Length: 102
Image (tube, rainbow, N blue to C red; front, side):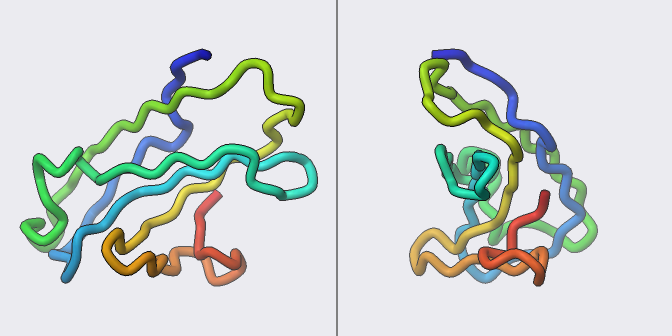
């Protein structure tokens, strides 16, 4: 397995969030099927999303481990935001069924 930095490390200008928010990164094949998904808290819960201040700039790098022996080749990467306790996704891109950004 190889450890790689996920493309598009999140840089967010934000306001406080009402709940704990996680980031998820989906790796898709050429048929737009998710072949690998990684989900983790933003800022590793060191700086909870409920404590963010308006217009505060947050940098959060995410590292993922991808299997090198996967049958499917990764053709695109998408990321989104998830209310961890409820499973609700936040719509960043209305054209994507999960609201994910490319």
